[in-house]
Image 1 (cartoon, rainbow, N blue to C red):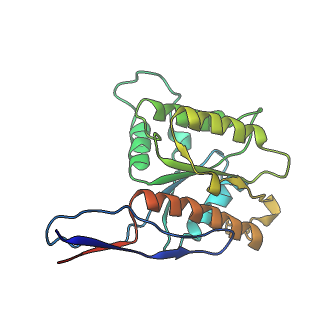
Image 2 (cartoon, rainbow, N blue to C red):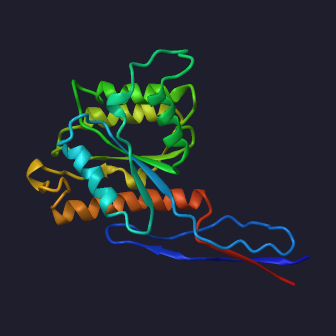
Image 3 (cartoon, rainbow, N blue to C red):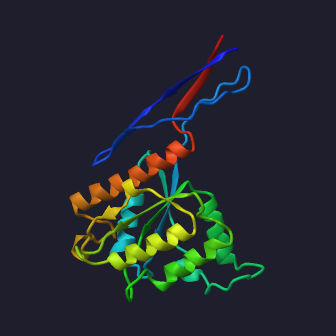
Length: 225
């Protein structure tokens, strides 16, 4: 019987994270050559409805710095979602678009402010629309908290609670506080602070690396007789 030979490609990035992409061992059919790199897709969801929010600026910066490690897609339909009504059939177009975008990505990165002691109602509403469709079940997710030290903890706690309820896979290595002050956002809407920008990039790449392993990336398989 032919023996599959599996090789992996190291994945490196700036910041606090470094790893080597691993892969599951496949047993392709006779004569099959499976070559190619799977680039993970990450949906970036801001919990703020304010365009000038530092949360939105952080995710806009992640998208701008994505490079070749992952494809970043910014979700921009938060204001379009109607209030969640259980059992709605047919579902509104904005909700169907949310389902579609979540199905098309390998991971989700959240960045949200804290309103009235929890995540904003608009973000909770989005998450409620995902429950019936199991959009986030087993999907790798992470969050970054850009609030000043000592703030935003209630938002983090409630976000973690809801993500646990919907069955998402929380990637702890990609989660954390990366403070972004309003003064650190440039006129282009991107985070100008070098340290914050580097750490945002590292967090996104950590999530991308985890998602990549889940979808068997960077693997070359050949058969030798």
